[in-house]
Image (cartoon, rainbow, N blue to C red; front, side, top):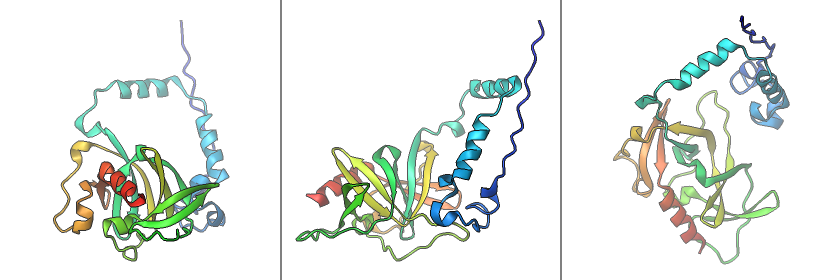
Amino acid sequence: MTTTTSPIAIVSIDDCWNRIGVVGDQSCEKLEQAVHCRNCEVYAGAAQRNLQRAVGDDYKKDWAAHFRQAATDAQQLDASCLVFRIGREWLSLPTKMFVSVAPQAKPHRLPHRAERGLSGIVNVGGTLYPCMSLAALLGIDENEGEAATNRHTFARLLLTQWEDQAYALPVADLHGILRYATASVQAPAATINKGLSRFLSGVIAHEDMHIGVLDSALIGYQLARTLR
C-alpha cells in the first residue's frame, strides 16, 4: 500500500507588521487606533489563514519526533510571569495573579483616604477597582526610565486578583508573558534600593533586561493591608 504525503499549502501572507508595524518602522496608520499589531484585523486574518493551511505528513512526523525528545535542563521552563516596567525597573509577578490587561485610566481619589499606595478607584468596563500604586509601595520613582529605542511603549492597567479582592495596577510599560526556569533565577543585586529589594525573591536575566521577580505573597499582603 502506498501512502501519499500531502504537501503543506503555501499561504500568501503579507507580513506588514514586520515592515510598517511594531516590528518595523511603525508607520502604519492603523497603529494609532490598534496600539499593537496583535489588535489589528489584518494581523488576526493572517493568523487565521496560517492556522487553516493544510499540513503534510512530514511536518507532523518532524514535530512528533521533536516532542518525543527528553527535556533538557535548558528546556525546563517551569514558571511563567507577566513582565512590566515601573519607572526604570523591569518587574514581574506570576501570571496566575492577573485577570486581564486594560487601557490606562485616571483614578478618582477617595475622600478621607490618603494611604500610601492607594491612588483611588478606576472604572474598567463598568466595574470599579481600587487603583494601587506599586511605585509608592516599592519606593520607585515613576518619573525615571523610558522605553528602549525603537520600542513601542504600552502603559496599561494590570487587573489582578489576590484572594477575594481585585486590584488595578498602573504600569509604564508592558513586555508581556515570559516563561522561565526557576533554577535560573539569580539573587538580587546589593545595589537595589531597600524599599524594592525586600519585595524581591530574585532576578531573571532576559535579553537585555534584568527583571525583578516580586514575591507575590508579600505584594498581595501589602495590597490588602493598604486597602484596609
